[in-house]
Image (cartoon, rainbow, N blue to C red):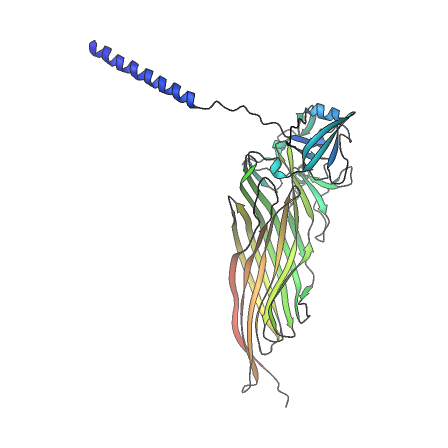
Length: 468
């Protein structure tokens, strides 16, 4: 019995000690902070009662006039103190791109509220997020098409989120016409005359809608040196390409922690390029755009915030040469590749890329002379992004054919002897210059290569008739 009382006393003392220790630790823990976050202010066409609920009163959107009844219906208030600003996302019509402004002042004028604003960007509307976006079309039709916000029926933002949590676009706005041909499906025209597509319509029509979706003859093109002594030309070229874009963004307290942007798809190209040189050329290179595709703005619902990402795409031709004398030769190539090429940020910029490629080429000497030559020519598809209206990554992808030629005249045999070798280099360039204020990112550029292969290596001779 005494032993039991002794054990019980030790147990009681131990429990009191543990309880005291626990209470002491609880006293040391800071109480949970009150959640002071507010719902973002979004003025979107699908919540408007009247066409004039939101009016842009000047060209640079410095001042915006808003219907007071609309603000009351949406329970939006602009209580601005000191130098504070309040970000607002505005989507005026379904066919115009959403944009961000920071409100610095609000003044009531009769039944309107006049907002004075300064520029805003993506960093102002993404406090704490871990987002995965993809331009591929996806709509969950099992989810109701409308939900209620502020007593108004609006789109169901969750119907564009797939089973893996990836967010897909709700609306695609046509920004620019191009030389790539007709659209794959019927589009809509909003009250401002702007052209747009809804993801629901695209999904129901089974249209293969991509950032790039072309099967086209690129035509004949040439680029020349300033002195007109060297000409690169391209002919018999056909491009077949499809591409989508994947974007991942992770932010904390409005600061960017991680960012990834990748272009993925299929690329097929047949082309012939040739060189005509009249003189010695030292380390010459040039690049220029030769085709422009449709420009689109994809609108993603990030919760109730419409985020606009604009894509421009086209084709660039580039060439380099170093020649010891005049000559002319041609190279023909066929290439197919599937690729995933992107940039990644986590405290600094890097690249993540992969590709599977197959290629073949032929070399044809048209006018061989005594010469040594190093030359390359390539065609790249480029895709450049804007996040809202801020410049984002530019990614290019394509092949360049590299050729070397050495030719000399054999006086004894009266023939031109030559050797040549060449191959293909599949890759491109990354360029990032993001001017999003809160993210404070340095610009970054880098070339990359995903596939290299030697395609020919042979020697030969050609009889030359010598005139006495």
